[in-house]
Length: 470
Ligand code: HEC
Ligand code: HEC
Image (cartoon, rainbow, N blue to C red; front, side):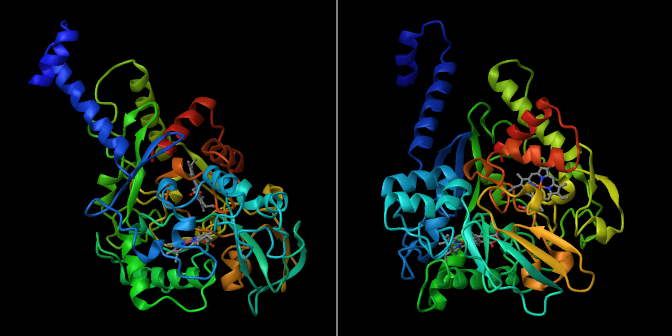
């Protein structure tokens, strides 16, 4: 009441109710500004939700368990939706003259043999990480592969059959409950996650996979001499699984959980999920048919009443983008893992054909696909190019990363990666496994060109507004 009177004294024309609402809004804003789990990014604000409301920074996830000063948190940071953004990596380089623990020869540098003795040398040595936000995953050619490595064109003069350099973006260590495979190529998936899966509970195979992943990350990225203890691994996995993250305020559209909208992490934390949910290809254990309109309902209620202000227009654009994501016709052709498996040269689908998990956007059953990101025709500066030959047919393929084929040795798996979760995108540019799309606009350009969609500038703006609000 006192607050109401005080405000009324200066704005006598307003009714009492409005200043109270304004006061509450200001208080909510102050709370938001001081909440450590709410962080700014170029499109607005990201929020992580965790039971109990606080992050335990004494968890092993934040501890240096190896020999090179790194923790999981070196590459998986709150502000970047528990991944990284190239903007932040650049800031860390400048702030520490390239000595922050993310800058380590083992897999932060373009090659482990690069000179890092001066600032200028370090800028060159870590140029892939600074430009594309990528870490060098290294693997030997698989034994008994159906293909041979004919040629390696590595600008950094290092990659060979003994050790291919595969430059990949860190995936977010949040919203892990929705995973159907672990890593871009699924290599830490100890057993395929099969339906039925208990909605709301972490699948035993997921926990086992994340445990193995944390072990290998500590031995690899962190160069530990000793494996972490079972207690440390369990603590890391429990911590990761407790995180739920999403964009929650948009710079122009305001709160994304306003009105009846379901943006932000609170709704995501209780999002129903099981392996195979809403699968378009008959893998839903309930037999329920795929419904593209069920794939994303986050922003159905964001525009609650008619209007014409900038906020209203921003909200309408996000809603329009959501519609396009679900209904824009895409003629899907030449996607290994899809067209060949279905035995159809072309079929009409949508973004949701591959990004089908409701309100999350990954594929709800493990489905590695080759959409062409690693193809030689899309090679960006600095990426090695690998020429592979089919041992039976003599056929040649040139890729910057063989993807799943590095694990299976199978010709048909070349260039296959998983369709990743799409939440918290605004906080973690660039995109795709190799960071080749610097912005979400470039992601749309990729699809427009790849599938010859004919997306208009207006449609592109709507799709970008939608993706930025996830
Ligand atoms: C040097 C950077 C770096 C460090 C340190 C690091 N990671 Fe990662 N993380 C990555 C990269 C890069 C990928 C993707 C690699 C791939 O798919 O081939 C990844 C992938 C993951 C994934 C897979 C998510 C998914 O969607 O499949 C999880 C989970 C994860 N990391 C957790 C951890 C944990 C836990 C630690 C600490 C024990 C850790 N990471 C340390 C860079 C790092
Ligand atoms: C044919 C299947 C398919 C279709 C259709 C498809 N995607 Fe994807 N999407 C993928 C796969 C697979 C990846 C990972 C590719 C890679 O990195 O190599 C991906 C990656 C992405 C990413 C990057 C996410 C990240 O974390 O880096 C975004 C964003 C995205 N898709 C949005 C869209 C939008 C928007 C549409 C519709 C215009 C669409 N996708 C249509 C399969 C598909």
